[in-house]
Amino acid sequence: MTVTKETKKLNVYALCQCGIFVALATILSFLPVYEMPMGGSVTLASMLPILFIGVKFGYKWGMGASTVYMFIQLLQALIKGNVFIYCVGAGAVIVCVLFDYVVPFAILGLSAFAKPKENGKINIVKVCVTFGVLIFIRFLCHFITGIVIWGQWAPEGMGKFIYSLAYNGQYMLPELIITVVVAALLLSSKQIEKLLAEK
Image (cartoon, rainbow, N blue to C red; front, side):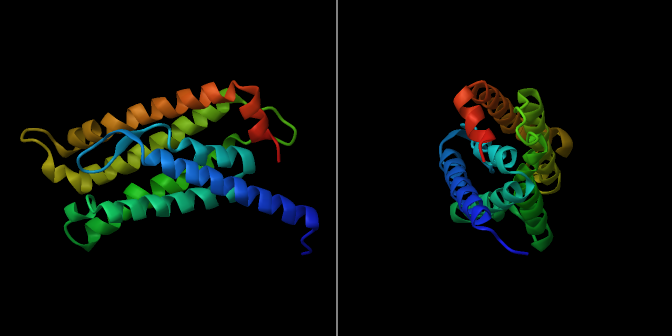
């Protein structure tokens, strides 16, 4: 298959924009509104740049960028050293890596579901609902590790399910609301809509 000069140009453009969006998401993740003691935080819509990549460029670039972002988040956790110290055994580490990092962050690229058709207008409702569903799936992933790993620290008389629901809901619900609201506000701007629509 011959790669045209125009295709190369578009790929370079997409790569540069994805790099900027991933960098922005990473910077925002370093500016938490508040952090939870055993991992997790409410940020200034740090997932939003990654979610926008899928809407702008589609599945290939969206999944690629979200995978890079996932590795950055995993690296941050390793550097901080405040997550894996709670994992007892190799099985717990595997569950933590899979359901606290690999799945919840890598799926953000599926926001490409809300990508408009060629020359189509961005549907703000569809975009916001898609973002909300993906963030809810991320919550479910953390909920699983909350039961399997962190549940052992549940207060006396509180079951693992309730503890995980309360702990993860405490930061994921605000994160979901902030992300969806900021997305809706940004998408109501003609400039942002144009940025996401242009190829």
